[in-house]
Amino acid sequence: AVCDNKFSCKDKTRSYIPLSMKCDGSFECQSRVDECNEECWKRILDEPWMRVGAFIIGVTATLINSFSIAVFLKKLGKSASLSSITNDCTVALISLGDLIVGVYMLMLFVTDVITQRSYCPGRYQWLGSWECNMFGVMSTFGTILSLLAMTFLSLFRIISLKTMMIFSDVSTANILKLVGVLVFVVGWSVVLAVIPVVGYFEDYFVNGLYFEHNPLYVDVITRDIFNATLKTWNA
Figure 1 (cartoon, rainbow, N blue to C red):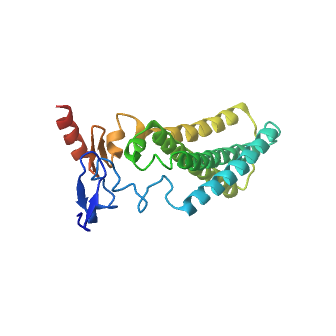
Figure 2 (spheres, rainbow, N blue to C red):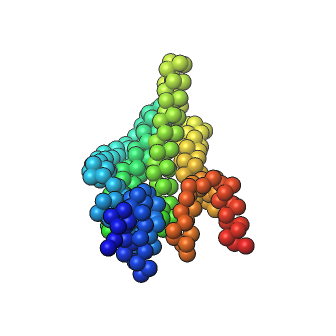
Figure 3 (cartoon, rainbow, N blue to C red):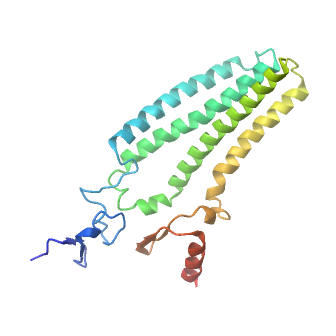
């Protein structure tokens, strides 16, 4: 008879683990049934309210910001002052950032639906996949782009109020300055979003370690432990 305080791994080894290790957040069974069962099945979006929220926010943000960008493109070239051009371009950047975040939320919702049966046993592989990296870059880029654009817009409006003037000189020099600022905002957003997945810098953002050929070893680590373990593994 099997003891009530044991949990069967239901794998080829027919091994058992203490019942307290079931659903403790760490894989002890090679079959991973201890963490992927009816009591503690993991999904990208675990709770129903998360899935509903991701869908509603994603659809709303995508539609509203797509409309906002369409309005901007329709007005493009019709503004009579530098203040109006600056305001329109910056608001368009904010809308673009929010649009990217909206698309990210929709993609996350769709991916959760597609992977609802495969994510739990393979979640560590998925967390290290290019798809997960892409989602991270998208969400970070969209958020930072909106934040930097709003910061620039706020500074521009403060300067306009402080000087009590409307920038009406739509000269080539002023347009080039505006383009330079907008390019800086977009470029800096790209840099900050991509840095965590660049090979040279990614060690600074590691918070876990997973070996494909030793799937039972998963732990939260510091960068120093990661580097030391990597040297031992490659030795």
